Length: 253
Image (cartoon, rainbow, N blue to C red; front, side, top):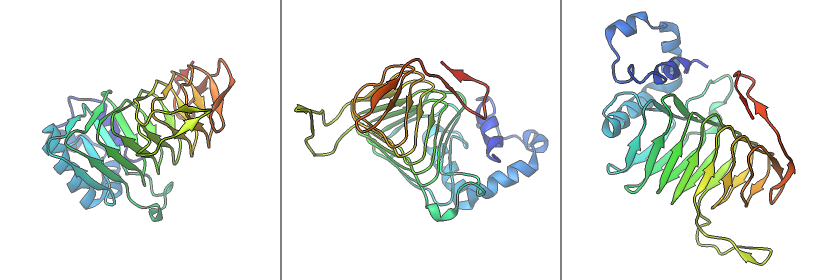
């Protein structure tokens, strides 16, 4: 993707905040121009404004034109490299999808636990009132993240379109097999987890390293490492599974 230029820079913390004339002279100007077009003028202005205000560096957040942003001044922001929300290749995502929304309260935290890039696709909604921690991972578009307590996502995860991750169930009481489910509970998604599209991950759930969650599942209970779960509610259907990304050489097992 053309935003790979920014991602390459984001993977080297010594470059962030040091956009020197020499680096601009030696950069791939074509790729920088395409990246700028994807982000747009308003997106660039929002990116620089919130990056400077919350990290002291001009490049930490990267938003596109259609991303709506509201971050309380007292929110905790810890981004060593890049946090991308919204930008996408126009050949992949049509603009009719709509913009993303980022809302962070004064008690909210965004923590990126990698020196590389955390990326969330277009049309996504992030409501952060607790601690949201994410590694070098890609959430596809139309993601829904509702964090009141704690949501942790590890490195190397592949999370499909329209996945919902929430650590609270609002004001509703909910029972499963006669057992009352907690209204709130920390969500932990380990390293190398693959979650299929249109899946919901509910409060209090831990998904172990290397696990795979089938599309259209509802994850209500913990998922052991390196297992495949599917269904509503999701149940283990295979053990000792592994997967690899087509665009990377690493294998999660």
